[in-house]
Image (cartoon, rainbow, N blue to C red; front, side, top):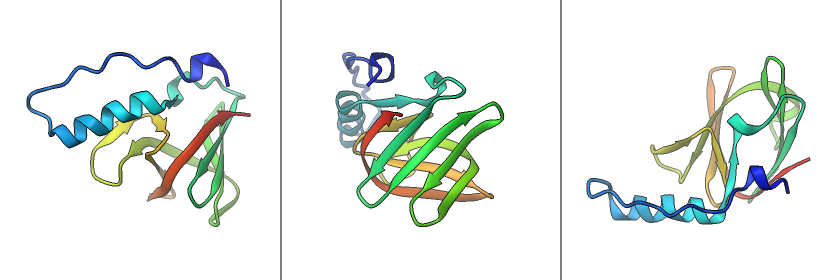
Length: 121
């Protein structure tokens, strides 16, 4: 994997006004790693393996296209929101191991099963 796609974890700063459980999960996301999609160049693709499916995310000139799972046999334009732990807090523009990928296709929000692996293909 490209080292720029999965930089080494940085020390996590705890905040007194954020729930400790959520802070633990955010720290876990830093340790497990993932990909900030803002760093994915046009023409590059990612393979996202979740607990239940595999998705290919292609960065094209006009946005991100996703295919895979049971719903998306052919690539469709998608808005990649980021990743969650299944709740309402999202790590914006990040695809993180152990988290759920959240994206929008045709004005419908899709949340995947937990991400097992993210790799450039």
